Length: 219
Image (cartoon, rainbow, N blue to C red; front, side, top):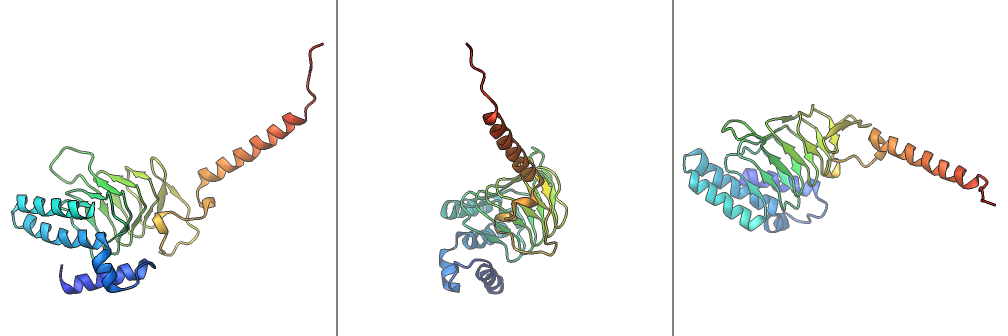
């Protein structure tokens, strides 16, 4: 990892994580940064045909950080892995610039072929904790993937998806913004949640009406 690449990545962590109090703290204590740095080494070996060395370097990175990044994966600039434990990024995954992902995220494949089988993630994408993005699909620029979502189809640019399987929800703010864990905090943005709340209200009302009905007793 070049000094310029390291410096801009550290700044990105400082900008987006209020818990990061100094550059030195980020360099010493953030496993996502360490994992990306080790990936730089493993990717170098991989691209130059030293496949076993590349895999071994990535294995060491997994052992030290709990983050598994295949040496064949392509990572963009200012890539942030927050918390990081359990993250898996597959061989043919491609990640754009300014992407932010949380722990337990998987960018996985659904095919046994040797070609492209992992996702392509655009610029300025946020992927929430526990989300699974599977297959050779594209997640467009500025998209948001909510926590624990399972994404098996392409996500258009600027779209927020949640649920299993992931589905689009409305965002009141159309400009790119930072959504923690990739999930808008206003439940009214999710039409399904809104419908559930309506049904719950109707059920409560029916229960109250039934309770007020006169009770029939056998003689």
